[in-house]
Image 1 (cartoon, rainbow, N blue to C red):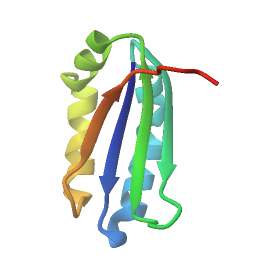
Image 2: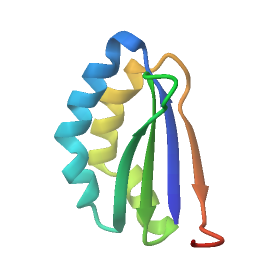
Image 3: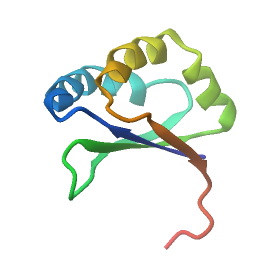
Amino acid sequence: MIRIVKMTFDPDKVDDFLTNFDQVKDKIRNFEGVEGLELLNDKNNSNIFFTYSIWKSDEYLEKYRHSDLFKAVWAKTKPLFIEKAEAWSVENIVKL
């Protein structure tokens, strides 16, 4: 299962986000059920980022979303937004 989260930050807070993400990315990657994690940056809007994560199942994602790790990461990330985050859970239909 793939989870994509779009985050739009206050341009003045992007460095704060990147510093925090750098500090927690390995913890997230090593969380039970995570098969991959990438951070993407919009080519035309330097304050828009996406996380692209691959999970063994919905259950593992839900465990993460209720974990102390997620709560700590979100507590530092959410105040940096200028727009509400958007998230999608998707499945790969065709692999090329």
